[in-house]
Amino acid sequence: MTSSRHRAGLLAALTAAALLLAVPLPARALAVPEPSTPVTGNATHFDGLGAPYGGCGLPQAELDSPDFVALNAYDLPGDYSSYPLRPIPASQAAKIGLWNNGLNCGRFVRVTIGDYCTGVNDGAPGQPFCRNGSWTTDAYNGATLTMVVADSCGDGNAWCRDDPYHLDLSTASLNRFVRNGTPVGDLNPTHWNNRHVSWSFVPAPDYSGDIRIGFMKGAQRYWPAIAVSHLPNGIHGVEYLAGGVWTAATMNSDMGQSYVIGATASGGTDFQIRVRDAAGTLVNNGRVYRFALPASCGGTCSAAYTRADYTTSDGTTPTPTATPSATPTATPSATPTATPTGTPTGTPTGTPTATPTGTPTGTPAPVAGCSAGYRVTGNWSGGFQAEVTVRNVGSTAITGWTTALTFAGAQQIASSWNATVSQSGRQVTATNANYNGSLPPGATTTWGLVGTGDNQPPTVLTCAVR
Image (cartoon, rainbow, N blue to C red; front, side, top):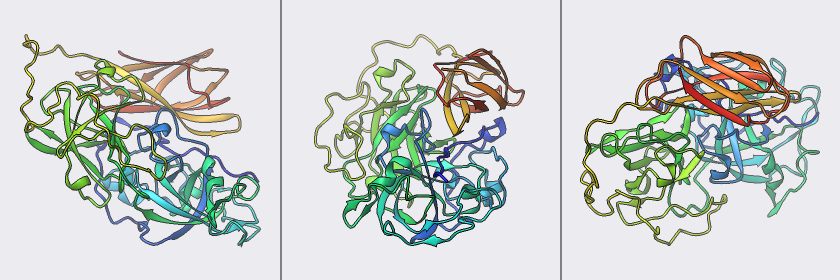
């Protein structure tokens, strides 16, 4: 058989009720113990992250390493049904897999290649792994690679549901595993057939430099969603300074490296944050990062990721100028060429040093608006599954929305959920269901579809408030 290439990531739509629970759940005593020493699991592989983001809230080009993995979203042995709630609420914590509602995003794992399956290892529900064959040692055993957690696997197959320590590896990484100091080169496809691997969490290899901060698509002063990356040991929380008080930020769904923060002053565009790692420790001894909504956003960020330069409480530090490989080679030493407008560089927080150029004449009028994002969450020969995320990017609540997309080819929608969907040729229109049309500022919901044809992204995707 050929190796599996199923998509990992956010598979199901959030309902309006789930939005109320879209906060980072605290770390817990997982039903599946978090590996402190290497554990053995099945390994499959997938071609790449969805667009524009992987499950951790970063575009693939912004990952801390080109070698990445997905962890199981759920712990549901024997249950292959669709489970839509993401993040999983505390009331159903027993269903949380090692993805841990995004709390293991940005961490690194050390992966070692194990035995080859000589039988059938297709992840079929209710079937044994490697049936009608055996696990066999060969020349690839012992090859290793350090990889970053960037996505989640919520697929309804036996790999993602029955094997708690299953890993879904980036396809492009398979031949970069190293044995005796040399990349294996030809592990995939002829020597794969879904292997055993052993793995455990490790600190970021040879870490240097400082964190990176970027604004998400649709980010603006009323919904300042950021992604934090280049982390020494994962991320378990972001705190922002507002009104002189440090406040825990809300995780953006279960995209564990994305948080919705607040400005130092209500409705402002200047921000100060500090970050906690997977151990709950403040990164860089509580270093404070100061930055502003980039001028290139023009009020709302249209790109999937817009880098934000920052200054720090203990000196000016630039964000790295390029996406590092798995082993960053140097600590950035240059000073940013400009300080974000309105961001104090040495004055105590809460009192900007610049005088506003104009005097507000009144309270800004509420603005209604929404944005839409599209991502493929599964694909197979002749078909695919995708979801569309609808976000309220305005400053006032909305009570209804309509998204419109144009397929790139002859794709047809076979089924859909969480919206009323119609298609005419390449044009698809989706209107909210009766339970997910109301969204406060910054809130999101999603609708999903199963389609036939190639999994190309739409050429046009828009959202309008009803």
